Amino acid sequence: MNKSILTQRPTKLYWRHPLNEFRASFCIQRRKRSNRREVMKGSRMRLPGVDEKLQKILDAKMDQVGARRHAREALKDIQLGIDHILFKVRFVVFGFVSFLLVFFCCGIGETKLINFYSSYLKKVDIINAILSLSCFAIDMWFSLDSYEKNSTGQEIFCKSWLPGESRPKAAIFYCHGIARKLASSGYAVFAMDYPGFGLSEGLHCFIPSFDRLVDGVIEHYSKIRENPEFHSLPSFLFGQSMGGAVALKIHLKQPKAWDGAVLVAPMCKIADDMVPPKLVTKVLIGLANVLPKHKLVPNKDLAEAAFRDLKKREQTAYNVIVYKDKPRLQSAVEMLKTTEEIEQRLKEVSLPLFILHGDADTVTDPSVSKALYEKASCSDKKLKLYKDAYHALLEGEPDEVITQVFGDIISWLDEHSLKHNQSSS
Image 1 (cartoon, rainbow, N blue to C red):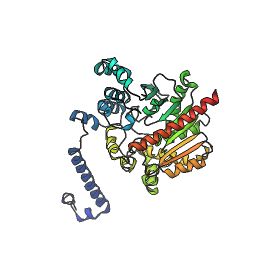
Image 2 (image 1 turned 60 degrees about the horizontal axis):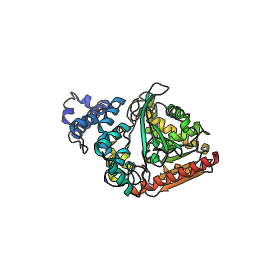
Image 3 (image 1 turned 135 degrees about the horizontal axis):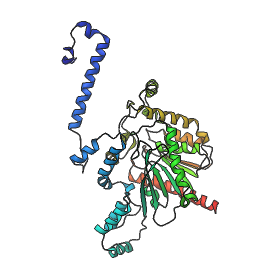
Image 4 (image 1 turned 90 degrees about the vertical axis):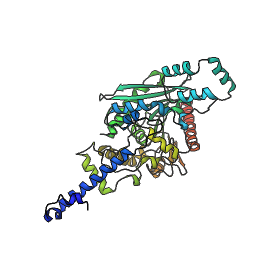
């Protein structure tokens, strides 16, 4: 027993009382946690390329959007240099052009691209000469960032990726994740940060209502689909993890509106190992009514559970605006309720479907993806399980697996885009 605590007990009656014993134990544990935090703070490993000034920005509390936007902007140059297969085009050519493509495919704006040309590649004839030597096809695309107010008055961050000069094959409405390679394959891709996520306004990772979140996504995507430039294109939903649950909820609310969906490790059910015991869950649900924004839900290291490739797992540290704390009570309750609802409504899924899942996924349950495939009422459906793959199929696997997964997705989209265009002509 800690002596400093014992000296604070004036009588035997005091320290024999159960409530005071509990209080003393709580104080000891709180001091231990405080000391541990100080030790961690003093020995924190700094990310390569991050100086002390930048580290202070990254260590700031990210609950409000201003801090997240500041951190994202401050770390942008370092993030552009991350060596990840999805930041590269399908074919990489020589020297300068290779660097240009990687830089461009990381989503910089057109003005910065022009500055890059003028600073590093002043002799256009040299570029043309290099291009003429290459037998490879180069996939070009451009991206646009914007902010817009939703119907509740929140400022939402939106992004689109469009193929270079060619007409898009289809419009892909992406519910979080990687979109560069889809655009380089000829698709118009549209995404948004949900309220409270990424660069959108709202308390970080707070979901007061999953249904309202989905309604906001429908509101935003409906505006895009009304655009004459995209109105005649086939429209596909693309959802990964929680985005898979969002995509399914969109379809259940708009059963005739979409031409298909690609679901990567969809959150139809959270794996049992990731969910607290039933008794704890009941207590948390009760607490959520009183303390909805509090971070009290126990959780495991998602990076370790989701990323099989160790190098890519380490790279997750550079995603500075991703939520890395304990889930907020109301958010956890909403996700549990949503997965329970989806699990009960699998038979109502009626659109063309491509489901991809790692068979070693311990974050979202691959058995429910199998159940979705079996129970969905559509005849046009496909399920592919990847042996030994974890949850982050498009970000956390070895390069050869990511290449295979992406190739499977593009093949399915190409087939269904062509089928749609032939039936409408």
